[in-house]
Length: 196
Image (cartoon, rainbow, N blue to C red; front, side):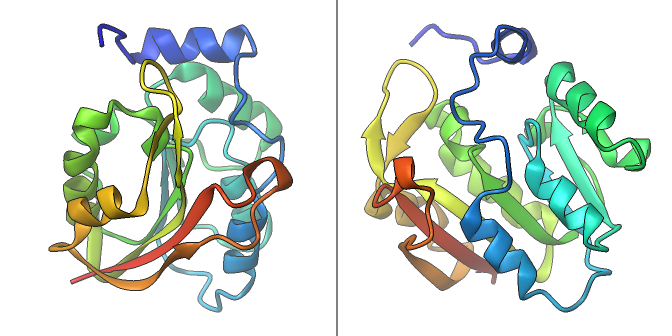
């Protein structure tokens, strides 16, 4: 595959409104997960954040230690316009794989994994493990569907994903997501993985 998924590619996708993954609001599985969190001081990262309705929801519900990362400028600009009181220093324009931030308590996965080249999937879980504190968690949804092989979103399955993270994380939850939005029903896995 010769498609280069760089910042120009993603900026163009946002500018031309080719954002089929963007549902315009927080996804139900993550909203329900966030609603049961008690400690609002935890340090949270949302990589490949896009328009990041998840960060907006967290921030407006008292989680002030939320960081969002994207290497495309357009979605970060959209977010800053929408959530004007969000701290600008917590908007990180960077390639996820080059992040050197402090360790996080929680990292959220929401349509980032399916947007990276499949050849980077092993590195994705290694980087997540590196960025998390001891016993930190990677929580979110992954597609459990074939999807595309030539462009994002790239699909995959439970067995493949497990092969990437089995030595790095303990499984708290790794099962079919029962709270998916209707177009994704039966096609997502909910993950709650804890750093070993």
